[in-house]
Image 1: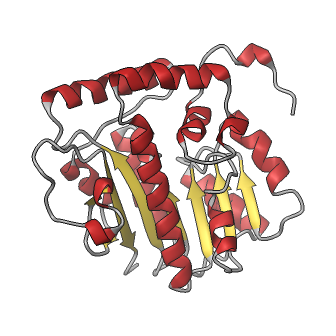
Image 2: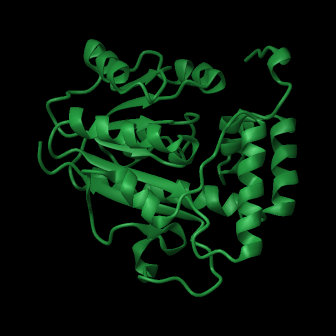
Length: 272
């Protein structure tokens, strides 16, 4: 695949996210300058790869759980590259005939997804701003990509921290309003909760580094994350540190000095 090298002047958040995964295809979607950025950031924040991988593992396990519970429709916002961790591939590996719509407006992501879904009727890709909720759902309806009269599983994995507070709140509220009863939500949020002063400073430095490459980042507390969920009804055990995922390791508190890294939650629309 040919790329315009003129746009390779700085690292890209989507390519970086792919390179941080423990996936055999990771280097396919990134370049040397992205991996160099990672190396530089890991000097100050050595937990970076763990943060991303724990979010990836959360997303995989939740999609599998949704599939096992009988859900067959997925809307993956900020989907990233179509690698082995993509929702449509997780569902397929689970033996589920799922309908998946993936949404991302990164030019790099779009190039790969257009090839990945060519000829598919069950998986669609929209190169659209995920925060334009009405536009996303109108495109889905016009393509008959999903049946919007039936429950949809909405996923925002390692995405929410790139949305400023009022936008994140509005997006989650609008999807709640417009998706049918019974729809599910799975999402993660990076945090500095329970971090030492030194860890918190490193997390702030990483957020600044993301901002410098055009990917503003908001670190949120447990309370701030919970507030964003608005009318969505949390599933047990509620908001969980991804250090404690899978839930076999869950405890309601973290040991002193062990930062939460990221919060994860699963929720449901229970009423209109």
